[in-house]
Image (cartoon, rainbow, N blue to C red):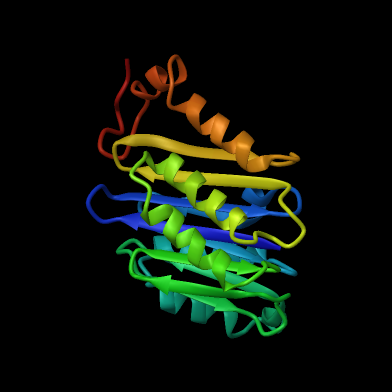
Length: 219
């Protein structure tokens, strides 16, 4: 039903994640993040918003990704129908794919990056997500769009795509939280929106707002 990617850039301190699905409102359901904590993606046949929100609370408290995944998935009797991907404040990653997830379903976790997907054509979709991100030298939003586009070209959600979202958290820039909730061409629309965010006049205004490195910044 959904494929997602979570990343951390050790050099810049930027956390960046994206997701796409063949249903509505993937950003609202799946992605969460905090500049001081990390990122998570909760998805699946019956995705748990409690996993998503509890993961962020635990990350904020300083827990590592593997401990968060274990703590949330083990006691949940419905875990077979869910997926969880977590990236912690140090770039540690961990994931869970329930046994009843609609195939193809799996996740790939490496330092600073984790991808997950269910109801996708094959593992190639996950590998394309990684390659699409790692081979791009563009801005974080554009790299995420490239990753989603590569995954779509590799087989995508088997139903096609209806919504897409991205989240970029930077120490020295305001959050970029973009969502296409219902579209026949969500990746095209997401790419267009990401370009607009990086252009004047909107981009100029972003330089006046508080950021982690300057919480009192103003015009």
